[in-house]
Image 1 (cartoon, rainbow, N blue to C red):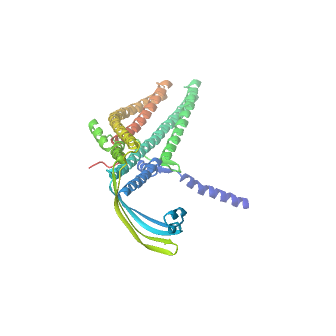
Image 2: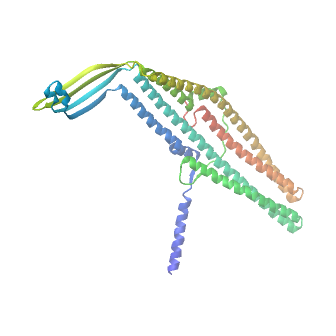
Length: 434
């Protein structure tokens, strides 16, 4: 009786665990996948954290323009016998106590402070553009991985349909063999065709698993993922090449980032150039002092106020070296901007050509699939009636399988070409400008 109860308990536990195991697969739409990617992508998280660093850098540089307040205190006991040369009392032990509040305010720094603040502000804007870049990159990569899963699933379905069709032909050949209208060769050829179709089913099934795993990795998820959707898409008008280039020049985050960095480097040149220039600071302090020598003691408030001028006449050419480095960095970024502009022009041409090519292939292959389906139906009917040979049926099957596979790839390529076009223009996943 105990064994029966244990068996029932075990079966119940398995039945309860089975739905939970199946529930671990998370099915996502393209919108859900992109939303997860823009929230949990590792590179994007690093870019967002870089904004916090840039904020801290701006606060640090801005602090140089604000008053610096310092509180100091001192408690000391001193004795110096060598001072007896001047007066015996000066060689006695001395006790000192003091407390001060000092304030320093830059008045003139030859543009060093203001340039440093502007450079930090440009760095903050640069960090925000890096977030845009990685957000769009996450959307692009996730979209590609999502459609790769759909394509792998389509190819796997075609492979299974081909295998099932081969099995039907094997059954038909066996039926004809029993009726005496087919030879052993026909049956053997059909059996070999079934066996040859199996590896493609296995390979495409593995491709589905690989594509899903790659999507899961991009989304940084721990559970298994699957997708819901199709490769069907409506055709959209292609923009003009000039419009694509013009929009990319304004919207591409890499290019905008470079422009902010160029402004930042120009300010850093001014900062470096002020290294050997005069500087004027206002200084002030207020405190309390106490001095005790032998049995004599004196204490009271103390204050000071003034303006300090510092002028490093010669610093060993350190400033000249820093200016040369900053100027070189500025020119290097300008060259990089020109290079990026040329690259964007080429990418715009390639993206438009890819959209055009994919659209034309989809339109062409849609009609080809319809014709291939009719051809296969005619050849199969003719084979059943004995007016078509096995080779003609095989050719029709191969043509249909190839046409469907090419159509699925073309649909996937068309969807990705539209995504790439938005990426090139720098507007992927962003609301269009009014």
